[in-house]
Amino acid sequence: MTSKRVDKPIAKICGLGFAELSREYLKSQKALACDAIIAAVADAGLQKSDVDGVVINRSDTNPSDDLPLRLFDDLGFRDLTFGNVLASQAACGVQMIQYAAMAVANGMAENVVCVFADTPILPKRRGGDAYAIDLALTNIPGWERQYGLYGAVGAYGFAMRRYMELFGVGAETFGEVALAARQWARRSPLAFQTKPMSMDDYLNSKLIADPLRMFDCAFPVNGAGAVIVSAPEGGGGERNGAAFIWGMGQGHRGYLAYSDYENETDTPARVAGKKAYRMAGISARDIDHAQIYDAFTVTTLLGLEGYGFCERGEGKDFVADGALAPGGRFPVNTGGGQLSGYYLQGMTQVSEGYLQAANRAGDRQIGNNGWSLVTAQGGRMDYHACLVLSPEKVR
Amino acid sequence: MTEERFFRDEQNIAFWEGVARNELRLKKCSVCGVVLAPGATFCSECWSSELTEMKASGYGKVHSFVVYHRAFSENETPPYGVALIALEEGPRIVSAVTGGVTAHVGDDVEAVWSVAPTEGPTLSFSVVNEAGWKRED
Image 1 (cartoon, chains in turn blue, cyan):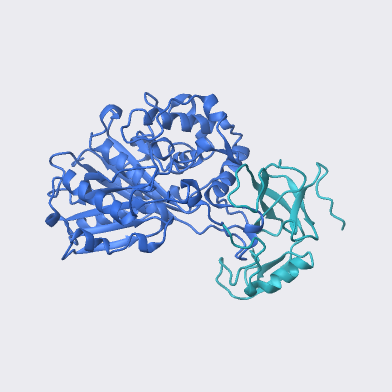
Image 2 (image 1 turned 90 degrees about the vertical axis):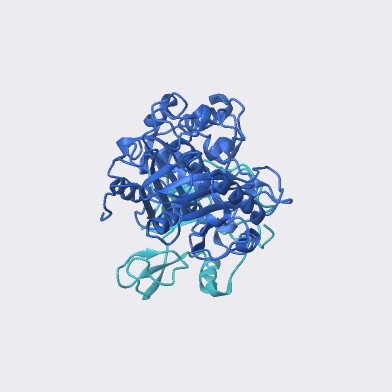
């Protein structure tokens, strides 16, 4: 590891805006993205003319033309000094913040808008089906399709089964994760799934790809979220508060389906976390609360292990007895996460991480608000990115 | 998904001919010796493109396993199992486990070839009893 410890924050997140989140198709990805950008700029207390950078995180669920750089036309941007579309899957929700932070830290831009928009729900497509795509391991087109292996639920079902059987974990452990997310969702005005959930409700929820149940899955919505990234001094956030970025890391791998490579239960989140902690000059033990990418309950467990909050295979004990829930030992996904809040890929964790670190989380605000971690991942747990945040501008 | 379920692409015709002879053909790197997926065109370990073909023994272990309770296409009738099989040579492939829908990580399995590709995939695996692999060598 060669990253150095920083003695001041790299950048800050200083504004957040959403388009309307919905379970129906209301408008295009591009239109949603514009709504979120306009709201975020206003939230930061900035003007259109203050924005000189735009980074777009495109979802894989729709064709790339649905969220193009042409967004600049609609918003009437001219003379931007920084702009790009990122497409390394859902890790981009965090990655775009990192690139924006590097840009403002190095003078390439002053105020960068980072936006994610998605419409998994189309007039003729249910949300879950958007992610139901083939998973090719043999490199022989057509092989996997013969067996009816479809997309995310298959890949994450494999991870869940292997995790359960390697480490002696029962369904209740995943239930703990789902229940904690639901309890937090009940405190968040943004969350969609707010009905109380008991362990029996979890265990009785419909099996999709056994052992994976409906309540193990994220809750897809159409919508968009945007944040403003500025240099620690200047920029926006004077009115509504800022979260300072002290550490950033990524960890990536090829999914190697041969020999002893363990893809399902050991992820390069490890690599991303080490990098970010070192940059911030802290360790996992210093983190007070975290927003961990939770497209499935198993990803919360693997995230907690990968980012060093417990050892590999010890997630079961770590999450027991409501540890992640309100009032628990280690608050996680305090807006209900993707499981019970809303699934906007990496933007779910980014938005909540910002609100918490900026002390804007209302009824669910964590009092012990020192260092916090925000994570995102893409692929089959192949691409990881994280941020270390703090409300403090100085150490 | 309306694409043909038993799609056979032209590029991998030798592989599919192997399947028709009840053979699963894998790739082996001549330089570093690692055994790779059937469709590998060069070695992802040492980047050599000197690959040879080899026939899989048909023995392996269950790496993981799911049972779909929801149909994502009209081709499948739930519940049905899909397994990730770790072949003894090294590569993992997607397949099915015969005889019901229960299997466990680490179960020893052996290949079972069927003759009716219109009824289902030709290759699946059956769990071998506790005595271990029924190898005849």
